[in-house]
Amino acid sequence: MGTQPSVHLIWLLYYVMISSCLSPCTSESFGFVRLKDVKLICESDLVLLTPSASKSLECARECKRRADCTAFMFTPLSGVSQSTATKGKLGMCSWCPAFSIVNVSYTAGDPQLETWRNILGYLVHPPENTDLEIPGALSVGRYLAINGRVPDPPPDRIRVTLYPNSRLHTRVPDIALRIMPRFQHRGHTNTLVVTCRIEYVFRETVFPEGVFPFSAGQNFEIAVLATPSGFSVYIEGIFMTAVNDSAFMVGDVRFINVEKAEFSMISF
Ligand SMILES: *[C@@H]1O[C@H](CO)[C@@H](O)[C@H](O)[C@H]1NC(C)=O
Ligand SMILES: *[C@@H]1O[C@H](CO)[C@@H](O)[C@H](O)[C@H]1NC(C)=O
Image (cartoon, rainbow, N blue to C red):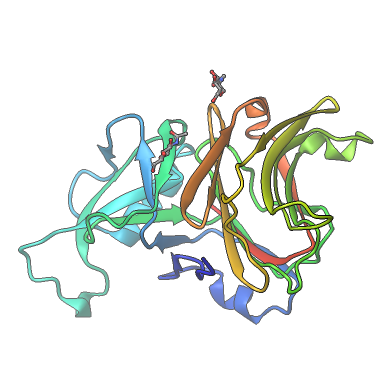
């Protein structure tokens, strides 16, 4: 709980620009970052991205050339002397196409294996309670990491909502996904609710008492992976649920709105 973003910024083309802009700030980006302890689970076998040992930069370039490459795995070669002076170690890079990424694992595994993800953009401390355009699309195989902070004292509820593109045209818009921690109020216990709304009808998952990884004044991390069967929700690196009724909106998610909590977001 209260973890910092588990994102390791190794190289990132527009990082300087991003860190120098005043908040609130939105940015599109075209770099790759190495994710620490976040592994992608592919349904299909991994295949080599480049035929021979390469540097991660070359793997990134190759990944960018393929429309369905959102990430790659890099295994540094062992047994060869890796000179740090040559800038970038050699390794084998492998990948699976975006549609076969089915899950995310946050448990530390092979410390050698690196996962590199293509960053689509950032929102750095944007305004709350505002529909904000998500940099890039949350299409299949893409992932959002939202890092926020629960106010102290806590509000009655925090709402993190992803809207499809149709948000613009409807008075009661469909909701692709909403993650809503409700804090103790009017005698109720803390409750986590995950929901979507399709044509005015909510489909809710209400978590049992005790499943509530939020507390006043603490940081939180919510991540969402889009897969062909819907949206998988992770809180503090733990898989919570998959929302599949709104699976048809995968690829059309365009806006995020966070109510009652300050936050930043990275879109991969
Ligand atoms: C994702 O992996 C977790 C374990 O890490 C598992 O509990 C969960 O069921 C998986 N989710 C899906 C949608 O496969
Ligand atoms: C959606 O999830 C429910 C329960 O987890 C499952 O019974 C159903 O088959 C899933 N539907 C699809 C289209 O994946």
